[in-house]
Image 1 (cartoon, rainbow, N blue to C red):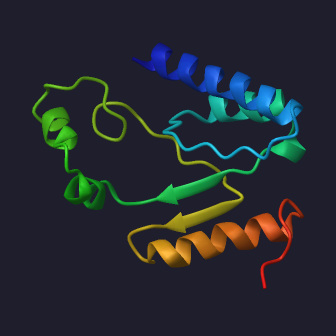
Image 2 (tube, one colour):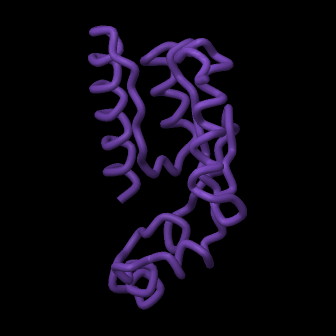
Length: 126
């Protein structure tokens, strides 16, 4: 449900904050469909600690990649409130957008590393 998604993102933000306070670089990966929730996490952890990377992919490609068949189940009404099918997804204004249907995993990883280097989070690779 929408309320479950909100609570999930809130919890992720709280755990992330704890790790940041311990001096750990944190990378999380999850579906966060609502702009308001992403903004709340950004405020919680601090704007300087928050980089948003949007792995953008057309839903048709996601369906082709879906080895569990969840998209088909969502389209058949078996899974309710499925993000991108029967529940909305608000595209983020990200620090980096990676169009995963257009570039390789290796190229995607290089973009992430470049972003982290440019922000001084990690040292430049050789």
